[in-house]
Image: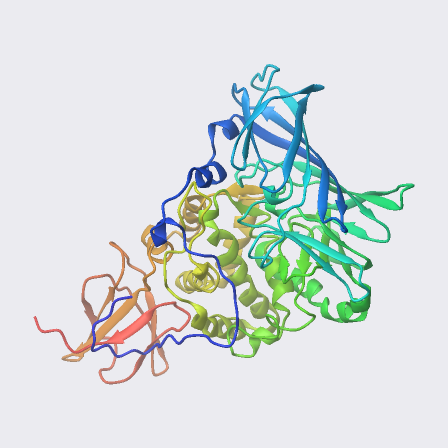
Length: 558
């Protein structure tokens, strides 16, 4: 944000201190580093990906906590969209492919970094369906900083028993299992079979179909996911868990709520997890029915902070309110709920139901989900609580780089996609000025894009259509630049003069102004306008629910 030296602000941005919060890094292009061939192979829809459509995965593995290894197979079922003979599968070192097989025949392949290009020998005719079996194994990367750095976490509980989980958003599911590691294509369903030594339990996505006991003192847990699922949402959580459950009567009927926690934390979990029915009430009100009734909802304790794995949300916030006991907003409202429970469960609607096709559009996940925190407060404590939370949390916003990242290279944009993104949506709510309409839009959004992968342009077009507003410049401003709209004004001869500055071309968002007890709507553009409707020298206040900066300047001489 560039401002003249004589600026006088009605809104001051302060730096947030005392809380460590990891956020996505800037893209390579944005910091002047060229992208690599591996970036393109990971982040784009390559010719070896586009000709086939995922239908089903069966991931069948054994996890050895002592050796810290994974061995097994992934069977990939797909339909042919157009002719193709070479298929791309991704797996990252130090994991290794043992073999590719189709119709009983071992196939040849070439490798370029983390991308394996499999030469298929049977005809791949459009409309036909096939199965590729992948044998693989090794010691997957250990995450140095879960969940922000991908990999496996191998810890122990208080009794010294293994406590294991994965987290891999951004870095890729191919850190630990071979797959089509791009977000645009999801299998329609999935079977996850995980063999672990007794008395450990594996908890994954979906519903437990059966537990298979073996003579070698191990058990295989078979979890079936009945809905489309993103690759990064696939989860294994392994520990000597205690389990308890309850039933929530939701919009689509009874919904099972299952909880898996370390045995020493059972009593704490029973108390802390009371937030789950509360969030279901709030989020079904605002967003519509929970999107995965067939798969149920689980909250699973893990040895890191937490992650939004679909129908198997992971939790490690230490059974405390806020984010590790802190409140981003410093208003107190952030301590009325457990941040990880509310935020990660909010992702069931925005990330797992509505999923970005390219991580450059990660704001679709994080902006709406961070905004869901304020809507949770709004539902349970009133609109002023939600407003105060978002306004207070602005102190963590950096306005460093654009929220939308670079496409086709697996790069996300600014970490401002969290609280700045939430404030952008909150600003749009003020513009609409009709909460019933706003709620209807959010619910329609989850219905329109139900179980789909989407682009930012699709979400932007949907919101423009449903609001009836010309939102292109609004989104260009807030998502594609790092500048915050600056509302400039001055008084002259009994009139208020005003305009937008630091904005993209054609930016024209209306603004609600309060003077004394009266509300006025102005429609500023980048050109100076004036109105006699306000009283000169009486203080004016731009509605603080709009995420803008405000500056009074000296009268402009013509």
